[in-house]
Every structure is written in structure tokens, then in C-alpha cells.
Image 1 (tube, helix red, strand yellow):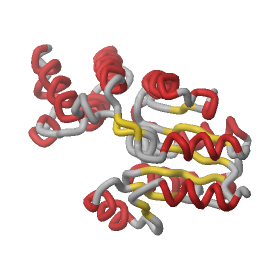
Image 2 (cartoon, rainbow, N blue to C red; image 1 turned 180 degrees about the vertical axis):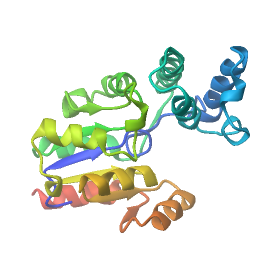
Image 3 (spheres, rainbow, N blue to C red; image 1 turned 90 degrees about the vertical axis):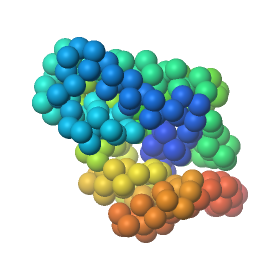
Length: 225
């Protein structure tokens, strides 16, 4: 962390709990119901229909109909749901001061996420954090095959900032974040808000996982005195 001159944040988890009030489980179920209403329930397996993750539903449809109007409609519906969720998102403890401190000492920041970049910008604007990241927000595009664990959004961020992977750090909370960082050659810091997430990250091979960003903030402050 002391060597990092560029920090890539995942959004939902390290920066905020996007679905704290507007549950992801309900969003996934609504997407499944919408597909059923279009007579397209058969596009999903039983496991995918029961998924609690809206991205599982979106990816499943994209695998069968990549680049289709159907996928575009489903992705827009998910973006709208994420936008509703952003209004009740819960900031991750210590994330705001950590972001501001890193920005103040000259570390360049980016968001690299599978969420809609439009929604990320809405959230950052509401928290007064836009200037800490702008213009480096890299999120979901219509090319869903490029979602993490593909490193596409990380590579976009690195290229845009002129950053060597070894000079960067990614903070994420899922195995897909870890895999994307590895593929991009970026050191990884895991954030886990509970024991289950810590176990999942550790089992995926994360070398360092923290359960609070407070220690990271303290280290950044000490390193840059």
C-alpha cells in the first residue's frame, strides 16, 4: 500500500453496500419475473432462476443471446434497479475518508466495477467524492463477457491513467475481483465485511484480507506524513 500510486476500487463492497436497502435478491427475482412475463423463462436454468445475484441472470441471458436487444433491455432494467438502490446505499465504514486522504496525497483513484458506471457516478456525486475519481470510472458495458473476472475494466483504468500494474493496488471483495487483478498483474487487497466473505476470499487465494478500512486509512496517513 505504501508503494501504490494508483488505487482501483471495486464499488459495491469496498466503497458502499449498494443493495443495503434495495435488496439484490429482490432485483434478481424481478429480472426473472420480467423474463417469464416475456415468455422467456426457459432461457434460465433452475439454478439461475433461483439465483440471488442479478448479474447471474444477466450473464445467463447474454450467453445465449450476446449483443441482442433482449440483453440490452435486461441490462438497462438492472441499471435502473441499481440506480434505485444507490439512493439507499450504505457507505462502507472509513471508505469516504480513505478515498479523500489518498486523493489528497496525490494517489490517483479509479473505480473498476461490474455495476453500471452511471450509477457509480450518481453515488459518488451524492457523497461529494466525484473529484477524487473523475473521470476514472470503469463499469459494466453492453459487452457482458468483459465483466470481471475478465480484467477489461482494470486494464482500461490502468491505460487511461498511464499506470504500470506494479504501481497500482486493487481493493475488492469477491473472488472475481481477485482473479481480475491477477490477470491484470495488479496487487490485491481483499475487503471482507463478515467472516463468510473473508473465508471465500481466503479460499480463492487472497494473501491479505481486512475486515475494516480503518487500518488502511491509518497506514496511508502514516506513510504520507
